[in-house]
Image 1 (cartoon, rainbow, N blue to C red):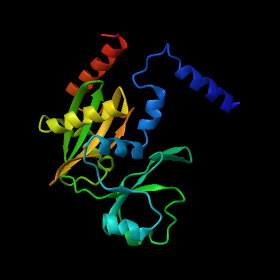
Image 2: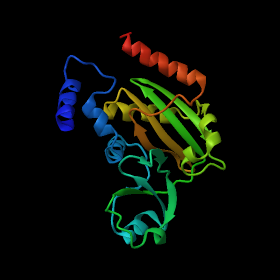
Image 3: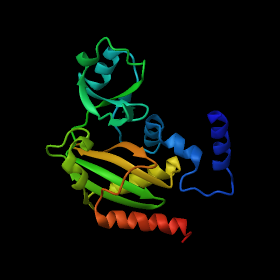
Image 4: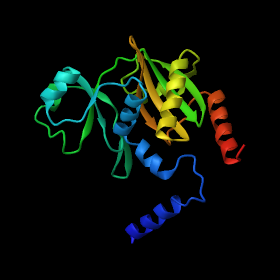
Length: 220
């Protein structure tokens, strides 16, 4: 019964009479981090070295002894009716020695020591860049409660605004919420969410994003 309902929903969502901020097929494709990194590579955007491998020695060779693991699937799960977030944390190769890394495949990724975290929002051809000082912030800034209210509007990274816009266009998403980091080598793209959060950003950004989405809905 559920399968039949999903088939019907898929057909309705693909009706050419509908105009979506992001078409459903592009939406599902863009949620895949491996698809995102492929797109970044194709348009020349820097991103961390990323592997999916069951061989720890291979990970050490490419990423060093310390790297990060990220869920390839959803980054949250429900346990006893509670929602839990799988935060990104550094691990040593010895921590996962003997584990079946392909049982539930994770992304293994180069650890970038962020001097700043950037949350970038795109709505079609418009881009907003906000910045969080990386001092004292964990690898996954979501673990640090004060960080959720500490992003500031930034004009320091025009190259990020340009690259984020090109990446969204390449993936054909009308809206995106992107995470970038900055280290000694400059900015690097981490991931893109075609339905990501942005209301925690400064009011000037949230108001402008909301207005851009409203203008699109009103076809202005």
